Image (tube, rainbow over all chains, first blue to last red; front, side, top):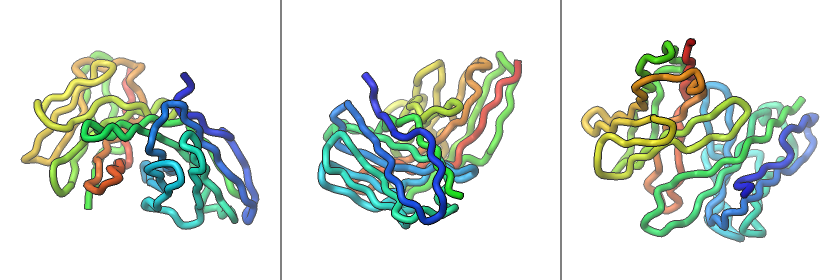
Length: 116
Length: 114
């Protein structure tokens, strides 16, 4: 059982280049999330999705776009990368669970992005 | 708005000694609180959660956390630290919106000294 898989794990970009991070989960989870992790700032929510075909903005959405065309995949795009987007990106998912849902997230292992 | 604070960036403890990693929270309504652990070059892993009920919550790897409503705290504890407990620990609170997103603290790096 792979859980949450992120690709690529490492990427170096030049300012202005574009790229897409792919997150795939095999747990049939409804909810998916993209976070970024920066030293001293913890994890900050970029965008999230509550189901296939839906997306919503989190705390720090500027400069990013997302798509959830299939339930198992959640893509994070950078249209014009900036040095401020150098970070480690984590995807996470959780089930809907109804009234018993208690919010436990399952995380991927991260994608380290450097923008020069 | 909800928030969590982890007042210590770094905690050092000797192997075999008890450890505490502190967390305070601010949330409207009932708090749903979580602890996650991150080992080097890995994603976060769930440790334990408080939803309702007993104020002392037991979780994975011998960790427990004490919910204190009057002090708005949710400190992570372990009676006897292991070197393998050395990692980055995050406290998180669930927001009160329909999306039930988690908001994370800034993290505390725990180092257990042999």
